Structures are given as C-alpha cells and as structure tokens.
Length: 87
Image (cartoon, rainbow, N blue to C red):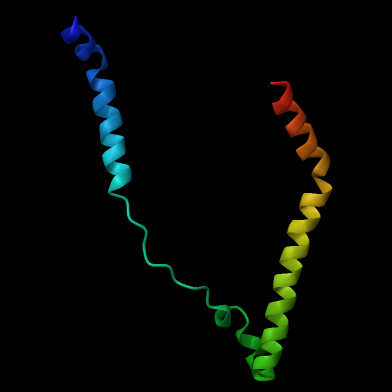
C-alpha cells in the first residue's frame, strides 16, 4: 500500500521539492538608489535649494494623490470588507 501511495504522490512531492529548492536559491541584487539628478537635472542651474523644493513638491504631490485615491475608494474598501465578512 505504501508503494502505491508513493507512486501516486511521488511526482507531486518531487515537483513541490523542486519549487522549494528554487525559491531557497533565489537571491536579490544589491539595491541601487534612485538618482533624481537625471530627472531634475534641468533645475540644477537654480541651485541645490530649488532642487530640494522641486523634489519635495513632487513627493508631497505623490502622497496627496495616494491619499486621494484611498479616500475616494473608501466605499469600495467597505464593500469588499462586507463581502469578505459575508463569505
């Protein structure tokens, strides 16, 4: 009986073992920071303070946009939460 079960589940176990070994051997490359000088280089003639101002404005605009999306889709989140609660 044990041989029959091993014959049936052997390929599945081998497949899962191969996936597990592949996931364990993954590696993450060294992170490289984003160089804003490439994107905001044309502001460099104004000085480093203006580069900081432009970078700050873009960052705050991005944060405002994400907050705007979350607030406007609060009803969608509530419907999803109610759906999960019903399930």
